[in-house]
Image (cartoon, rainbow, N blue to C red; front, top):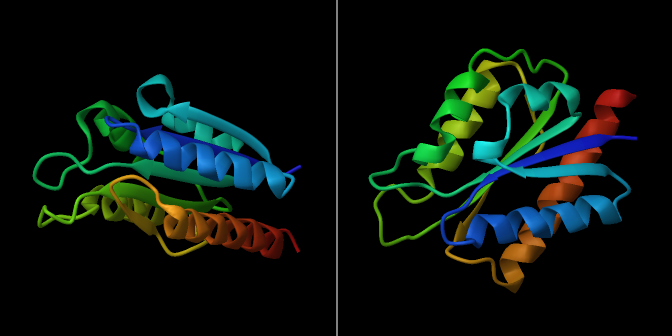
Length: 151
C-alpha cells in the first residue's frame, strides 16, 4: 500500500485543517496516511513514505515558521530520490510574501531529489469549498504520479 506522510505547521488551525482535508482524501483513495505536526516529527520520517506532503503557513516577513526551522534544516540532509512530493499552505494576501514558505519547502524537496507530484496549493487564510476542491485534486495528482513511478 502506498504510504503518505503529511507534516503540517499551523498557528491558527488553518494548515491543520488543510492536513485533515488531505488525510481524508488520501484515505478515500486507499492510501496509508500518517499525519503529524512539524515540531513532533523527524524529517527522516519522509524516507519511509512514498508521498511526502508539507502544509505550512508563512511567518512574519515571508519565512518558514519558527517551529518548522529544525525540520526544514534537517530536510536538507535527506535523500528523497524516488519519493513524490507536494507542498501546500495557507497565507494572507495582505502580506507581500504570500505563502512563501510553500515555495521554500518546494525548493528543498527539489534539492534532495524528490519528484514533484502536483503544483503547490496556496490557500487564502482558512480553506473554503473551492480550496478543498483544489486540495482534493492535488491529492489525486500526487497519487497518480506515485502510481506512474511504480509502473
